[in-house]
Length: 402
Image 1 (tube, rainbow, N blue to C red):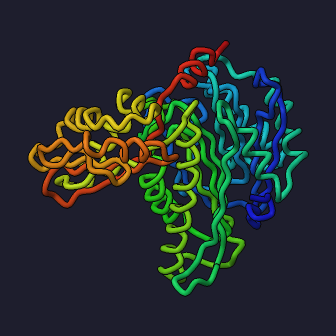
Image 2 (image 1 turned 180 degrees about the horizontal axis):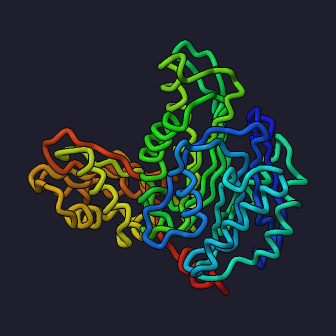
Image 3 (image 1 turned 90 degrees about the vertical axis):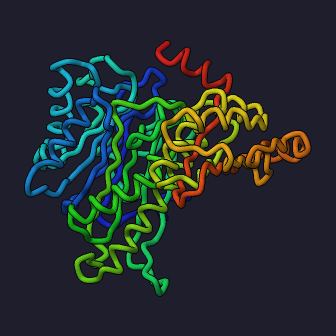
């Protein structure tokens, strides 16, 4: 995907290498909205929120919520669990951007990602921010996507038009994301920045973004762990002249586009699960509610035994049944059905694995393995995407800070 496709009117992007990462790779990303932009954010529910997350949450609580002029992101250092110095450093990042771009520090969102508990090297960031500002262009999306990466195998970018029911395009949504490990659905466990040229109020963006996150980043699992730094931001520049307030159809079109971009970026993250070979699309049906179905699907996707079986392409339906029964959700054994790749392995008390083994083993070799589990007579259903768990994940995380 070219940077030209990603370009959003009213958005400039730039990146720089400040020396925060030991690798010497780019580690400062900067978004600039010269004319200001309305925005929303969804952040981690983790109890040990990073200083950057707390800065963003503070700005979101302000009333009225003022437009933003910039977003600055550093990678290689989480600025989490850093005591009183953490909030000071986050504010200093915002101030450095405001001085560079001639705006107010409260018009700057801040994000950080990387190692927890290490003081943020402000002298490096203060040098990196002007360098990133000097590289600002409308087509700098790929540079920003690379600069926010940590253990990612590759950058994650995606764009879609905002289309009305008649197919006419009235705007565009572009996004970048990072994430490969410490991924579990309790907001996002990653960073994501979405921009649109459609005009929308903060309250409208709040609804659009929360719905999108619930159906994308809240439905992926790599390792079951959660981060201190999760942040998803949606920014609207209004440059398309398509105003959400004028037509209800437009906000629905925006929601559909944002959700689709989030889902694609979320799948990129789970496919990039550290050392992952394949992912599972786990659908649970027959629950008493959608929430109950999601609980069971999450439990299956988080199970190390299921994930290692997925890595080894082993159609061991017993591990799926084990994980499904661990929750407090009502599960009727006489209704239980388990399919792998469309191959029925267990149906209402009957073990069909032996007769369908060869077909099931072949199904498990797919890049994305569909898993369907029916647990009862209800109408509740939900789908979660989960990566496998193998040797490379252990190696990467055993060496993470060394």
